[in-house]
Image (cartoon, rainbow, N blue to C red; front, side, top):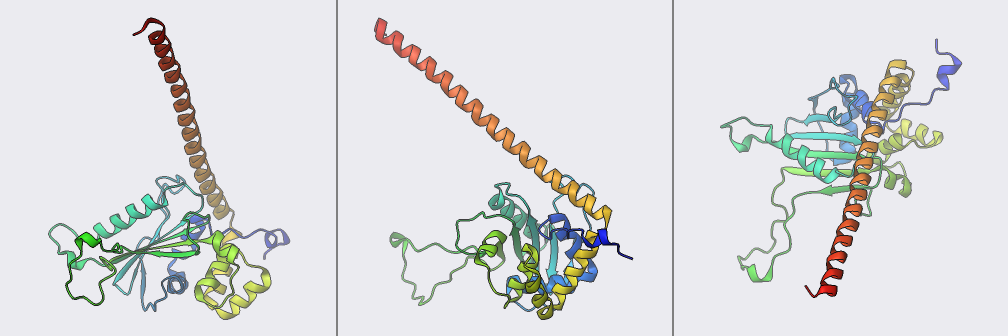
Length: 281
């Protein structure tokens, strides 16, 4: 029996990487994860396999306990999904690293490269990061415009745009989504409203349109009643905030030291200049 106090408990945010992994990493929620990924990638998915459903033992540590979700789609595409709660100013480097690691770990020594599957990295950001006018940005390895000095007329009426189809990156910026305040027509719009927390009437209409979202919303409410889950969420949140504070402190300290060293160097150079002007050397 749920008492009145439990009813008033605020739901844990799906924008937490811990909550995201706990919800979408469960085998029983595979259909919902499939529906969510179809909304992002705009493709039909027949089969989905979750490759790392378990939480790492050190998940409290925000640096080493990375709570990403790796899945395989139709045995052809590997997708790495990560929720970023706070801006640690390393998305470009982080995404490149994970994309390279996931791609290179597919095959062993002496295995042919042709066995490699396409790799897609999806970063869901609860902050603005890129200077782009879209809440959903897609990046691929695209050829730059031809240099005139290096142009060779090979007779191609249409040139290839991409160097490879085997890597792809999706960036979803939730704050931009909220600012746009879109409708609930597409799967992606419906899912992202669940992430950012739409008003009650909107969520009721979304639940009628998409039963997978309704199911996940109920799972989220049930998870939020667990004291253990709430404690894990708070431990994880604190670990991330502590790391960001440590980075900010180190950055400010480094800047202060650099300024102080610059002032001292300026004083020394000024003293040398005064001596030279006074004595002629």
